[in-house]
Length: 305
Image (cartoon, rainbow, N blue to C red):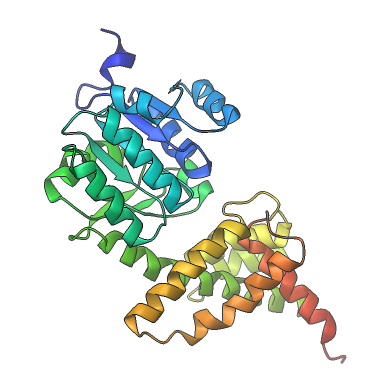
């Protein structure tokens, strides 16, 4: 049997269903880590990219289920998750472990978990903290929740595409932690834009602002990741599109409502992200809120003297 069929000595072949920004990066890193990777996506160009990265593209989710006992899902919606869960329930063997990495409603993940459990397949709730560019560098944090033995069993797989994995206990706790993380991302991204713009409008060199503040007490991971995109105006190379981010914002809002937790800073960011959508940045990175603030600054030019 070939290395591609065997995977690694410690683990068999790994499947990846959904080969967008995050899924493609995870698949490529798993290939680099020595795993045999079988993947699929609705888009041919994404399947072709997997093949160029050293993986094997297959026709659909069922084909992944027939070949792999550890499968990663990187899907855009609850509907896609439920459809794939049905396909895997019909094709994957009992004992298969499915690592669900999407930012999706907990209720939808619970439905998928139950569908798969009927066939002896374990679904783990494992959302990711990190951008597409961080995923390429294997700089992701995994918020794992669900069956602890299953989490341990797929530990080598998770280590193949991430920097760290936290076992957060009960299924669904991964998504709850992701809501906390994304709330802070929403605030820190806008704060980064405000800080950069203050520096620029005060006459400071933009690159120097990024360098100095990125190494200061006022920095954040979002400043380090997105401030360069803001000053270089490269938000047309999205780490996450504003249209996708709207889904995440909605989920955070639902979590805040359900928990009765006030979040005035988060609420203050919503109009800026909405304005980004309305001013031609729907398919751009969320760093484009910087231009929204620039437009606002045009109404209030800096004082002379």
